[in-house]
Amino acid sequence: MVLLLAEKHLNKPGFMDKLITNRSGKNVFHSASQMVSVLQDGKMDYCWEYLSVAVQHGLNYIVLPDEINLGSYKFDNNYKLAVVKVTGKTPGSFMELIFI
Image 1 (tube, one colour):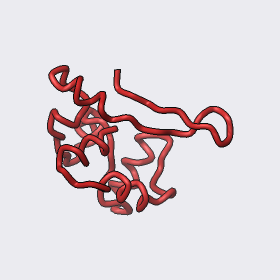
Image 2 (cartoon, one colour):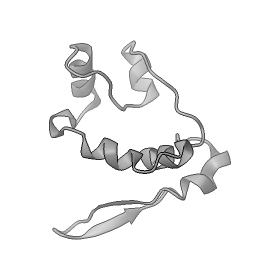
Image 3 (cartoon, one colour):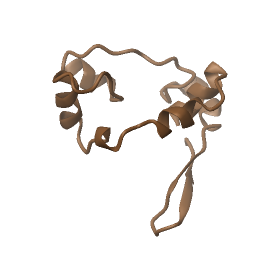
């Protein structure tokens, strides 16, 4: 959702798809500690994680603008524009996620 909002906010059509398409399956982690370890070992340049995790581990971070970070009630109506299609509970099914 944040990537889709960033695409709209930056007026860069295709931004989200480009990032998602180029991701590597080996860089999808099941825990923050695994991801932080790979990042700290220099095997990854950057990652997407909660601010609290970055602070806890002394990592550098950027703060996303309120228009896209899903954290400002002021932009709730804007956040609702980010509808994301994900796989459903059964093979071949999909569902849409919206910010509420």
